[in-house]
Amino acid sequence: MSGEHGLSEISKENIHASQQASETRIEKSVPPYDKATCSNGIIDLAVAVNKLNENEILQFLNKANRIEKHNLDYGSSYGSVKLRTAISGVINRHFMPHHNIVPDDIIVTNGCTAALDLLTSVMCNPGDAILVSAPFYSKFETDMYVKSRGRVYPVYVPVNEVESEDQVKYFEAKITELKKSGEITPKVLVVCNPHNPLGKCYPERTIKALLRFANRHSIYVVMDEIYALSVYRTPEDVSTDKSDNTDVVYPFKSVLSFENLSEIIDPSLVIVLHGLSKDFCMNGLRMGWVVSPFNKNFVIAAKVISKIYFISSTTDSLVTNFLSDTEFIDNFISTNQRRLKENYYKITEYLTRNNVSYVSACAGVYIWVDLRRQLMVWKNKNLRPGQAQVTSVEQLTFDDEGEMWASAINIGRVCIVSGQPFKSTEPGWFRIILAIPWETLELGLDRLLGFLLK
Ligand SMILES: Cc1ncc(COP(=O)(O)O)c(C=O)c1O
Image (cartoon, rainbow, N blue to C red):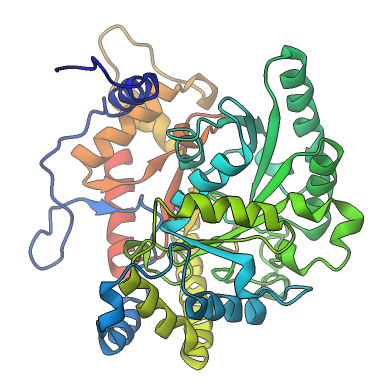
């Protein structure tokens, strides 16, 4: 049997989608940057990882790592009681839940990616609609689709309205449009708080407005709180920084901490995501968790599906040791936040000095940057035969953005993420990672601006 003959319709569609996506203009052979061994390699400022705490994590894990007899066995598909107890400890200490979270509220998965697939299977029939405010973490679209066939519909919320409760009007308009078609069932609202890619926390009143919206339409709310402990600036930090009065920071407030949740929404509609990849800088261990304190049927259905995925027994033990060391974890969280904050101030000072606008942030490992003017300069230096000079940023296209992105990798030796996969509406916005040691980050920024402007 060759080609696609015999494959499921789902797989045929997935193959076509992935072939389209991989039609990039990247030279495959360019190796990653390494100061000692490959100084001309690509500096990765694209993947949302945190490289600021590698030494501490490696030291801890190498000391704690001991494979025992029971690690050779299957263990629990959704996390041992010990592991879920350690996770609930982190949540109870740091998310300030209104009701204590207990191990039975938690299902551990192979990363939040797997959790997104799992919860889509539990909540959606194929084709059901999932609403997400755009720009959004681009993999929501694929993670909730490739297997479970949930359909993500972007809801365009202007960046300057992202903290406003009035944004509900855009969600109402989208749901009316979907319902009008008569064929699409809206099922889920995903709220990424703190926001990826904007690096902002939603104010409490805005989360409440979104919850009320979901309740009115009886749809689930998935609160993706994967960056909950990577909030590095508080309202107090901003009040001492008088230089910029457009810079407003809201404190992170987990939905689990809402006192009167049942007055706002049927709590069984609310599910929370968190995991190891961002706040604990260990994306390679592949572990995330779904927290569902208000919907036992969801937990039962999710446990059934978890049986085909099974987290690794070894990772279960290792992470149990790690998360159970409360003194280490609590110090680690505050050290990480301090390092993120230092890098945020360094990168924003660098961007300001080089006339690059950005959206002020307080959380996450990235910053959302407006490179439209620089893209215009680059475009005018790289016009194809017959192309006219670009005289305003409004004339830029997503093709220009994509070409510049690919050339930045191939020629500039630096990789950032362009706005198009995030469903940005204006060509020329990019997400840049800030959670890597400053020396490499600064070199990456120098390369980027040098490539664009010289
Ligand atoms: C908002 C958001 N959700 C989920 C994920 C997936 O994380 P994991 O590594 O746990 O699969 C990411 C990773 O970038 C993310 O940014």
